Length: 316
Image (cartoon, rainbow, N blue to C red):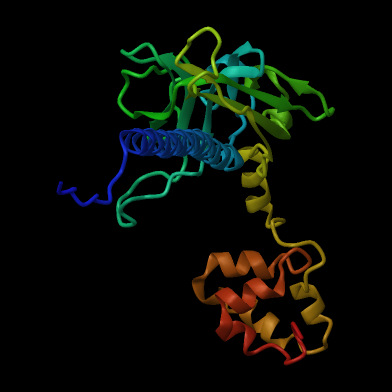
């Protein structure tokens, strides 16, 4: 009787065991990659929310830091003054609507004749998808109409700053150190028309991770970003500036004056210049006729030929 030689191989139990082991390994690897993808998506969404909020805060902060206000003229009624720093519709974190004039308006074409002072406004309004959007409106010129309505998203010059806003508000620091939820420069004293500082709060919605929201909502409130800034410029009193310019008192206090130059001893140049009528230059005569108020640096910069005839000790 002839016997068949036995061949090496796997039993059915070994094959089934290897198959199940491979399935377990594949399930583990697949789960690892799925979880890794979820973590990556969550990190991307968190970064998007943080960067969007930071960009909006940067733009609003730059506008507020460069805020400028021209005070009303003497005898002008407060309600007739077009320049205003106005914030209202306060909520949990302060005013949600703001309008003011800023110098933060870089020109796209340096040669164009456009004002460096522009009027801007920030406000909340829903878009067609029902998302709350923070809008920025910009006018290419300073305000001229005190009765102009507050702009909205349909006005030319409006642009989206942040989409999916969960919380937004601005508070204002007055001269007495108190934080206020609203501000209106209309009836404020001219030198206190602008707040001393501003606190901006902004939070955006972010996509919820799987299993993060018990109620099954697709979006959750993000981190509340808060930034405080100081307003560098104070209100401008045009009448006072014009008066200073007319009286020649706009120079720095304690400067080396023409009178001190005359005290150096040789005043022939001064007498000769006035006797000649300043060669027909009325502005030069006005400066020389007020030696106690005219800084010598103004003579040196505007009339170097006159300064050259004065003693060498002048201005040294």
